[in-house]
Length: 138
Image (cartoon, rainbow, N blue to C red; front, side):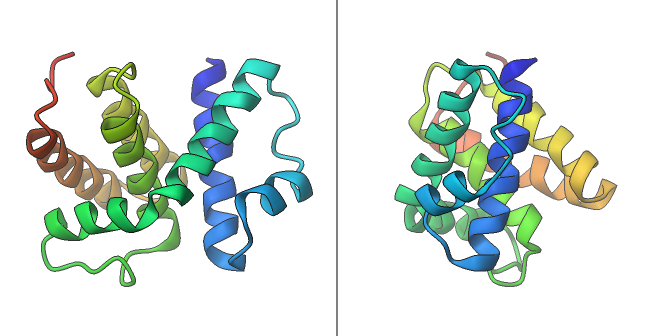
């Protein structure tokens, strides 16, 4: 459960960074989102945020390539950051099972966006999984 909560907090920080154009360090230090997380969950959440921001151009390129008729700028802040988070885990965190990365993203969409967004995110991530050669059943 702590990783699930850490992903939620990471998403909230990515959303904040996207809106304010602050750095991951600034957002992390100014936020109370780390409260309620264990030390290891805090480390995981911060590594997600920093990793997404470090690779955001490449991640956005992947998303844009598979999000038919959608540009990154046209997506809602929350949806694009859910996708960024999941694509980061799929591409740069091979220890995260594919099913976990995709399912967590869909659940985040259901909690923070809407049913249509969860379907869209699932579809985009399915093509990303195929492109990356990840086993969708792992």
